[in-house]
Length: 223
Image 1 (cartoon, rainbow, N blue to C red):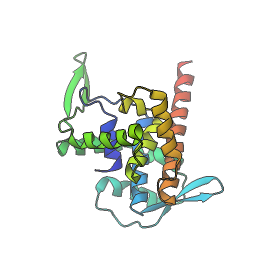
Image 2 (cartoon, rainbow, N blue to C red):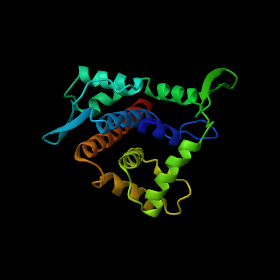
Image 3 (cartoon, rainbow, N blue to C red):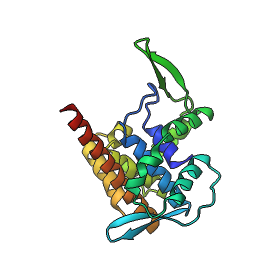
Image 4 (cartoon, helix red, strand yellow):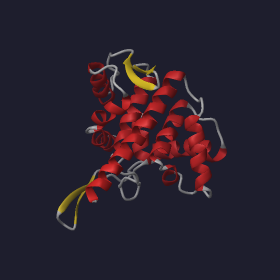
């Protein structure tokens, strides 16, 4: 499973098949997860120019995963860009691609229906939740017990923290404030190689910026 697939499973309710995080934050976090995956695979790096991170291609050869390779090819054609300026384009069609693939694997179920009998809607409830349960168990071990995270788990926690949805994923925590603080501490700590940590930091910033811009635009449109 990709980090983006793990993130998507965590952010869709198993029963209702609805997302527990809003757009565009969820979509941008998925794109961020793909960029982190490519960094873990040593396909990309984040170079720091002053205080600004920029995407650098280390290896443009395909990974063999079509979802990763589509985004890698995009970055190869537009090198040296800031992650926050690329994340919108990289998120296009990504959520649906991931959901469809998870359904094809039998992990999710694609449930077609209509709202008020008129408007078509697709829900994605869990069909085989075993992998998601394993991911949740690792998250709980890190966030509630204090186990040291591996790179992929820490990256997930950093993205969930950027979206401010950790309590929506770990729902049985007694102290939600402490849970959020633990997630932030992990996101800010030196848990990974420098290149990966830089990628996660840039993705957090890009996701947060995207949410702020979308909220501001929404407020302006409603005024």
